[in-house]
Length: 351
Image (cartoon, rainbow, N blue to C red; front, side):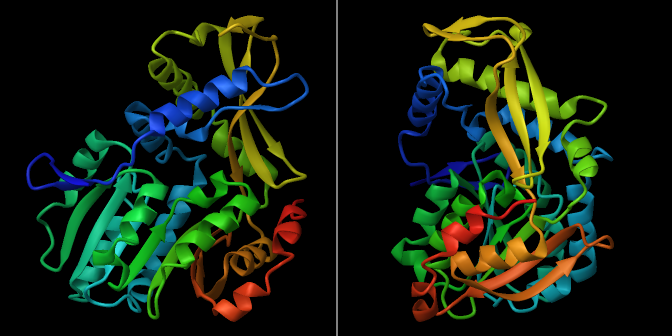
């Protein structure tokens, strides 16, 4: 772990563990060589290189992408309530921080309350951390801002370090990023983070609750084509990792579809003609899944907290109740041990 000097007064801590790029490259090759009949999938992390993060930021300003405005509305209406239980002296760690447009609403609330906290923005891109943190650097008296360069797993390992584990902490996971994991994996991910929560610690999670298939579809397939551009950029990232132009963007298109059975939107790559990559044939029209965005009804959210070993303390919704901000806490170890059949119940969720 090392402190990287960012631009100006921005401090970024490099918490990366070795092997991420190698792991993604291996997943790409595994997909290309998968047997016929098995679904081909590429890692979603391909979408989030430096350029991908900037493209995604543009998407959050589009009218069709309702998630961001809905979450901003919730934070503006309830920021003081959300930060109220968070202790002075806490580590406030945001997973996948992005451009800080939303979290600044909470940072302003901490400042109004005169709570001294250390905010850590966790993201994969050093240039983006430098750019976004420079906006909030030095503007607060009580809030101190830092960057963490790494993955979610790196962030968990950092929080488990001896100098951090006993400090009061609040984990922020906003933007409905939880929807990028299937329901079972989402519960397992939350469970790993819930194990580091101590008394009075908290986790704040943004969840897309929209149940309107047309509205969801339009959010990821808007008329300007920004989201498809964002997804296609993932193939350029794959080329960089593989050290050659394995994917020619002229040969590929993005297909988006809403899966009503599982309650999620899915994004696929599909070649417009037969292509050969690394000795593997991918036929025209064949689909390779790269992203999924699960939506959570009230029942599905309740099952998620239970499976993750969390107990809901508070929730806040937008005016349409299509987006929700949840504040669950860790349940007792005894109750968590009884959750034997939760993966099966989660897997059965869908529409």
